[in-house]
Image 1 (cartoon, helix red, strand yellow):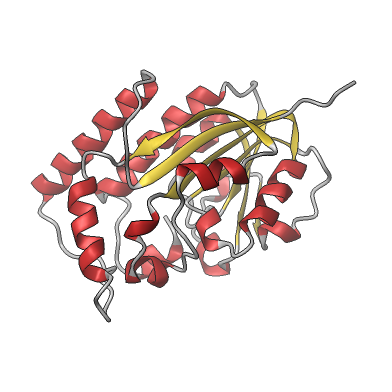
Image 2: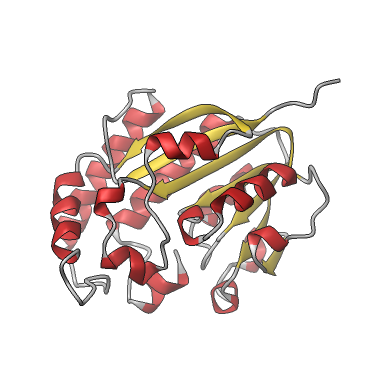
Length: 241
C-alpha cells in the first residue's frame, strides 16, 4: 500500500488492495523466476505486497517515502533503501526481477525509469508491473495521488521497447463502469473523493470476489477487453554473444 493511501485511512483489507495482491501472485507465477531469485521491489510503500512477493526470492525494497519504509517488515526483506529509482547505485545486471506495481505513473520521466530498470536486470531478467490505464479517466483523484498520467496500451508498448513483452493486459474490467462514472464526476470537482469511506463488509467482500474472478481469467490466459489497470510481464533481451 502506498503511504498516501495509509494516510487517507485505507486498510489493507480493502477489496482493491486484496485483489491486487491476488493479481501480483498470478503475475509472479507467470514470471517463472529461478529458485532464490534476487528481486527488486520498487515503490514498495508499506510492504503489504511482500506477503506474496517474499516467497519468490530475496527481496530488496526501494521507496521515496522514508516513513513508509519504517512499516516494511524487516523479516521479509534483505534491505530497505530510501531513494529515487533513477539514482540507484546497484551494479548493472544485479537482479533477476524488478517489480513496479503502480509506480511508473508517479515518475515524471518514466522513460528514464524504464531504462534504469533495464540496466538493473540480468539478461533475460523480468520486469513485472501494473499502471493505471485509460487517459480519459484522469481526474483529481490521480492528481491527489501524485500521478503524472494514465497509460494507453500503445504508448505503454513504446515505453517498453527495451523489453520483450510476454504478457500484457487489462485488470479491473468488470468494475470499470462504476469507476469510470466516479472519475468522470471528479473531473469537474474541486474536491477529491480519495479519502477512505466506510464500506459495508458484504460489499467489500463482493467486490473482492469480482477481482478474484478476473485474476483467475488472467491466470488462464483469457484476456479482458478493457480495464482501469494495465499489467505486464516483460523480459530483458538476452545478451548477444
